[in-house]
Image (cartoon, rainbow, N blue to C red):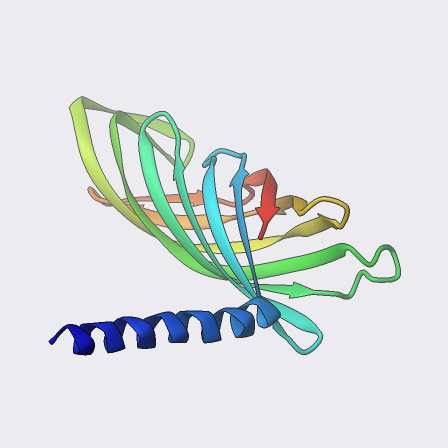
Length: 173
């Protein structure tokens, strides 16, 4: 019986070692922070595909009364190479879900007051556009982006944020 467990352990170690070089050649990970109305921390996985890069982006954000988990699919285009080889245009789309706890809300510029604080689940769709500069001497990226979104909160409020601008800083590994 110990030889069977040892065989399984060796097979798992060999799979991990064999898969590591392949992954390092085609992907790059980022972990960073993004400022803005919905500031947060994010993880990003880039995959090189021809003359562009595709990315999975997941961000956990919070402000004074809400928490959101945002998942985006981003595309990095190298169309700005005549300005700088390290400058990328990025765009994408995705969705978010979370909750808000507050005794008021704003809808169409008006404030609505509740009698007590309410827990309100929310769900929304997001767009994303921006510029990113990759520092080559150190493994960091700096970016500026706009992340407009539309969300629905229960009870039936719709919130539209047409231009949430943010700065981001990330470590590449």
